[in-house]
Length: 268
Ligand code: DGL
Image 1 (tube, rainbow, N blue to C red):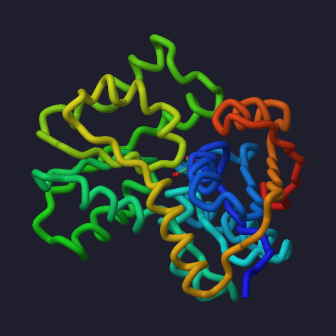
Image 2: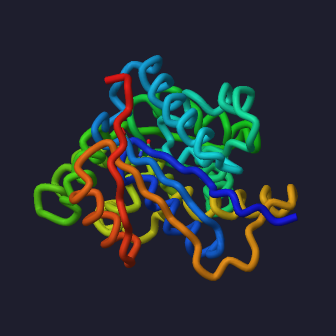
């Protein structure tokens, strides 16, 4: 039996749109609800307990909207809330760290993998733990890149200053002989051209988006919840921040018109 209910996704801001874009490609008939918490972005430098509170507040909202699945389209929120969310909610909950880890493991040839992400994600050790569970031989090196999220939220994707900042933060990884670098924050694929330029063409960049959408598709198919016969899917976007700015970034990244509503969340 197909389900017309929407899939709910959220992120601290526009980063999760990288997952939405892949959902459009792989699950084009699904109705979606996306929440971007730009007013409280970035999550990645906040205390863990606060990120958990924000994440559960948004997931409660999505469950009230009667979603059939939640995708935590944010590495930081995944690192601190996924395990508990799976117990708390009656619908499947997916994060981006396991899919990103799998994609990196299948891409690496030298077993030397780098991870860049927010401070919370990197200090959680979630990527290394997940990858070592599958292959304990992997060499995993991580680097937090706190300023990257703001560059993306501001839409400052390719200035000279952006390149300088990316160069500074990737410098510690340059001598690690990595062949694979995980973009362990869903904002970072928007900086992919500059990150690739700085990392060099021999390093494969991994975004979780593709593998996450694939996993969502598997789970929905397995539970018989895939949406079928839906030529005009409904996509609802909410932001806690400036709706005009969010619309601008979303339309550029998703290459289509979107309608964005304002959402006000309680905890500041
Ligand atoms: N996009 C988010 C992530 O994947 C979080 C960025 C932030 O708010 O710090 O980690």
